[in-house]
Each structure stands twice: as C-alpha cells, then as structure tokens.
Length: 74
Image (cartoon, rainbow, N blue to C red; front, side):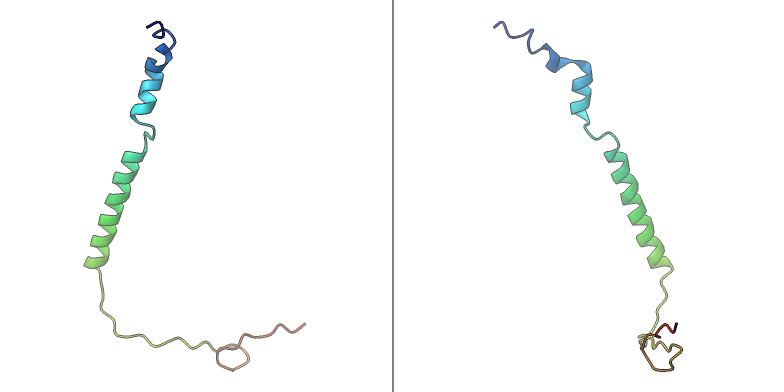
C-alpha cells in the first residue's frame, strides 16, 4: 500500500529506544532497593537483642499529675 511513508515515523530510532525502556532507571532502582531490604533484614537479625515485655511509660509533667499536659501561664 502507499502508507509506508506515512508510517516511517514509527520506526524512528529515538522512538524505538523510548519504547524499549520507558523507565530507564527503574530496573537499577528496584535492584538497589531489594538489596537494601535484604541487607537491612540481615542486619536486624544479626544484631537482634531479646528484651522482655516493656512497661508503658508514665509521663510526669510540672503539674505533678500523671499524663496531664501542663498549661501555659501568661
């Protein structure tokens, strides 16, 4: 047919390269992030310390009453 010259823009090298990898940095970023997750998991498991159950923290402010926020005095 006579439409080959009208479709020539689709075979332009710039467009074919764009469609081959529309996100050029995605693959290295995913690999780096996966490596970070593996390293963090290994680090936390190697340095894991066992603690017993923790007691809830009780905050005492200037008022002397437990869990009561101090009021601003002007």
